[in-house]
Image (cartoon, rainbow, N blue to C red; front, side):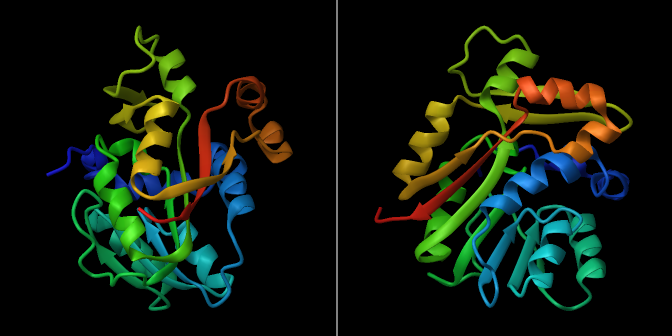
Length: 234
């Protein structure tokens, strides 16, 4: 089984859900960047891989997508089910395992927001994303910026893939993996993906209004990275 740290949220999903919709780091930083790279999803079959409390699933549905949403955490699955009210298929699934619920070439888009850094080995999920996407389908994901984790934790070797433990204010300890940009790009390439766009987001003006210190920091130090990749031949 591929090592992952997604179970950091066990017992904390509902607490996390209460904050994530309005957190400026999500609402005014990560989400606007991801949405800016989304293709037209009207009538598109979209896999929301790591749906959390369901914000993206709801957004996709409101923009005409046909949505399958999955998460490892049963509480997140329940929260998403309640949020989308039967409009989407919502399943509990582990991204480190085969996506047996999905047929080859089923999806036009795979959206994976702020999930990949919980996985040590990206190749198994990327191979599955490639399998379930249609030809020239889009993989869009956000993750921690490689430079951010390296700088924040003052790590000696930028090129290492290593486990980190963070202590989030009012939430507790969370573990995840950091990796260099080279590892990200090589895993995508070896799994049959072609990087189309790479975005280092800037915080929005709304972020500045609610959190000026955070805005100043993110304006000079990227926190997340957003990548849009296209399914190519393996």
